[in-house]
Image 1: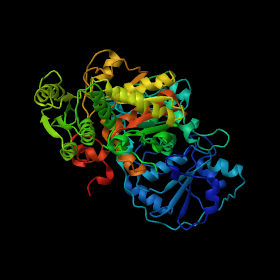
Image 2: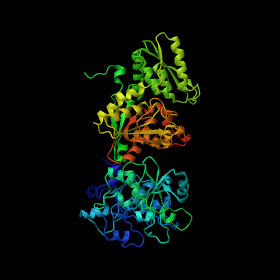
Image 3: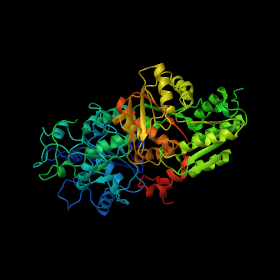
Image 4: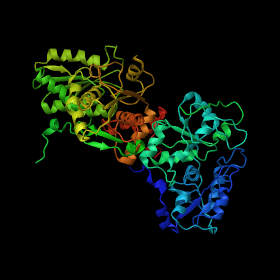
Length: 287
Length: 335
């Protein structure tokens, strides 16, 4: 069965034969959790797909918000993308070092600010390397571009909205963190956070949406089965959450690919909800 | 030559259409029975034909006789056109709240259209109740006979689907159908197809999809006839268990909101080129919910009941939808 929105995905074959196309821009959005070395940026400096620029998830952020990488305002985002040479009229392909982990955050951000033509490289750097395709440490020469930045706020949810939703139950909430973190039995990588999950939320660890060997996103039928198994209902509006709004976008990407309505992203995610305070927390495995 | 003989023989044998997006979303084969391609434009042509044939066989109608019915519209259109083709007049009683498109269509069909206020079944002015009274009056004055079609409780309606729709679905899927889902107004389609498919294979699952404002879901889920909310869909939903629905072999039931079904209708237009009505939206969401229950790899059939053009002034009208705080079709908005 085909993906409903195949344009959101490109294969390594396709990318290899289109590298150097005038309107193509390749983006490395590798990202690692705090304290993990090498960092995404270090990985990029060591080797990246020729011509790729680095989308720094931690830097594409609102400098005035203490939470990790909350989306910046339109002007800031537009300026940052323009500086990376990403702009109107470009076909943008994003990838990450793991395969399908942080690239969807860049994919989602670019689209949230209005860029339509963005795709994720299927299998990412993992597959690219496994196929012995060319990599380089050489930094690309970037021609600044103009990125018309317009943020669709409906794609975002904040804490107040999630709190209201506890009562209204209007939107189903899915959590992309590992089963242990969801249950509250595994430690949070960010210090000081409580363990557990938003009451009533569903658990779908983001790594379940890709093939553990090839790192490619699962076939359409398999994706649908995983979403259903998590208890998600394609006819209900969804909010996707995770540790800090990165892997939540993996679920958003999977849903989009097979034609489900796009979920909104809870940008604050567990980094906000899990802070010591009065937000209600549920522990234990998914129901 | 491959020729169908007029309106009557053109009823039924509709294609089964694979719904691409719904299938890709669920990993199932979601198939829609294209009832909007019946010559009167809806699934109701089947019931109309069976009701009229049944009356003929029982000697209740003679050429020039009159068919009287209370209807949300489509059955009236079916009866009027079947009547035209077979030589009967029609008197149609309809709640005044139904879409202008359907009223215009009934005038066009040559039906004698009587509009009544939309009041509950308990009120004698209710369109179904009033149509029965009217049928008796007409019968008393009509030498050629007059029938009250009584689609809700006349089992000829259900029989149309036991004898035609169900077997068509079985044969068109080569017996691979795993589940059938649809909404109910009279209950004839759901119960009839259910009975037929379960005869072929008792393992076929039957699901009911109910719009808000209908009491049917709560009847099956909580054993009480209680309705909450409302819906802009027409011709489906019910406040009682009709004779046609009674005893339908059901395996599950879902409640579907207008906010859930409208985006499906909009995407069908822009992505698949199919312009379909509100009940079809409820049916497709029902099929998607059935897929969630059954898991991937199943073949699930539902009904594409009628064209969306019959409700253009509501379903595809951003002003109307916005007033109701419902999703609007982006491509029609603000241009």
